[in-house]
Length: 460
Image (cartoon, rainbow, N blue to C red; front, side, top):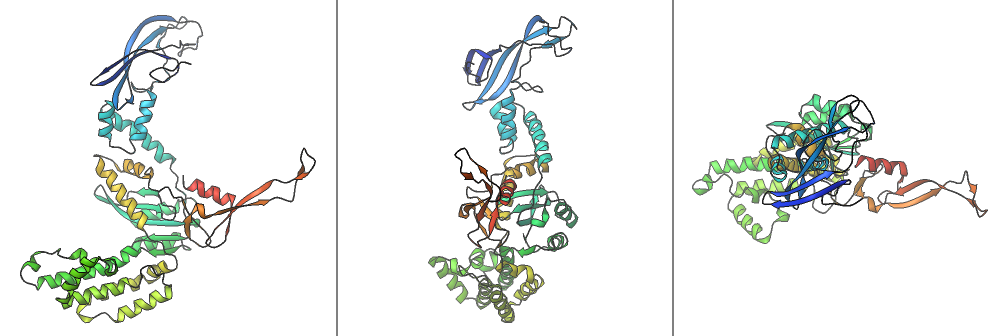
């Protein structure tokens, strides 16, 4: 079939007009109806006068595009009903092409509605209605499956606290729910497909999350996020710094944020210039010096590039707890909190997972919300589920060693079925592969083809 300016089959474009507003294509559809849509009669219907209708098309070259069609009217010879010429490339509910509607559904999940409305030349309400239909369909189809490593975190959105669930091992967003209370988290976990697969759960230090996981995932290892744990020491340092500021005089008292970021930074990451400034500050203030060195000793429990064992980390913490100077006893509250979460805090040294990916997804969702206006929660949820948050590197989690590694590190091997064979055309006995297995380079565990297929399905 001939290709025309519309790039649609069975259409003839008679004229293309271009103006400052965009393109206007005058076209006709060349296929006559084969039967009456009312009674099904196959007799050739009467032709009536055409009706001029403008259909909005997807933008061309970034310009608005209109398809002007003289739609033929018909009258059935048997039932006398009148009907319009069927146009399969036009949306049956709106005066636009099907590909324009598809364009809106696709782009509406990643771009603000107002931008699309201006680009296409439609009312923003029309864009919103089409996107809402797509959102309802997407959420109805969404059935999250349990990962090996689950991340849970709170999300402040539309003036309320929500909960986000992610796969921190394979780096993808699983779901959002509109509450962060214990019953809502329980409900989500209870209906999660194959939840017994979860071996690790990373959370911040919030009791209801821990209680929900312990009740519904009793075999999972709970890990308190490292950043949230270390932030407790910085919070104590802020209290001491403000106490010192209230007793100071002059300009130091007037600036509550002075040197806050410098004091929070880990000493091993400072540039020579910033280290010089910090050193001068601490030498002139004994209280800040004691607080900063206590904070640094707490940071050292996690080490830098050196990987500590759980026993070493707990031993260092116990020493740190007993060596807190009396003038900075705010850190004793930090030690009390760590003791209350001891099992979850030091589980990190057995399985070094953090909630960093969940926090990053949190930030991306907030950016999506700020990009537009008037979004309802379901719209933000659908946008979050379609965010391209995973990078090009495809990650997997070994269910035996719980190690996280790129799929490319898995060595393909093949097993041959020797139980049954057949004689091929050449007369020699031949055997067919009955399974494919992949070898994890971390723990030398074999993963069957079924496991790999399940992994692929869970990451789509």
